Image (cartoon, rainbow, N blue to C red; front, side, top):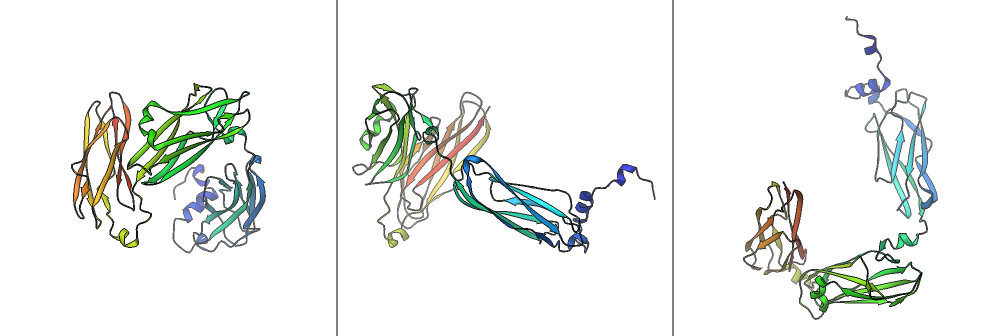
Length: 374
């Protein structure tokens, strides 16, 4: 036999274990590991979110006559981090698995599994950590992270999301605000010039209108479709004025106006139209500047009554469409032709159409086009 270099003779336990695990023979790693854990569940009890991560170390003993090797440890979320030895544990020796839980942003009860897989793949063990996170007291900045003005008017957010808004109904959303300044603020709200077309559909009320220092208030925004037959995306922006001076950051309100299906009977739902789209996304890949890129989409009515396309809204300045018909009998189809005009500079583009239909299963669909402009 040839003489091998001395360096080749230095094979670690890890290498031996890795090689033997590759062969499905009756070798020592095919046997049961017979590992005993001191505990498989740890209850942290109540922990404070403000105190940061907590850890517990599970200890086990190799009670078999063979080597025991942890191949991997899996967890269910990023809040849990396991640490363990990558070396084999000899018979009669002990090993450890340290599990760290980060409570940041996770108030309440938790019960998190940690699955340990060894060189004997059938020998999986589930360890569990549990407890209850006591949330840290929220500061004013935590509760009102949106700064509406430099002189101390804060808000919980600057986006009000209504979701679907059915015909003949109204919805109200409230937004909390806070005067972090040193003087009283007389507040009013007004729509931006671009949103004034929606003025008949919305009202805005600020309570109280005079907000004292360190006082909380509420902005109540209402979308009202009881006297309207509007369909599609409602996107409204307004600004708050303080003593007549306009603040710097607008607040946006979004809703999608659809038919009201809440009173439909089961028979009506069974006979409803069903909108089928051949696709709802297309990427043109790399495209030159200032070009019109066109894609066709098939829309078909797979239901049992006429499908009506209530509204198509372009959600960007560079997307247009052509739709030859907006009402489809059962089994009938039409072609939606969508064009994306590429910009005059290199960038990744993505624009979309919102389509509202009288399909109770999914009354709003989106067609999205993308391109890498060079």
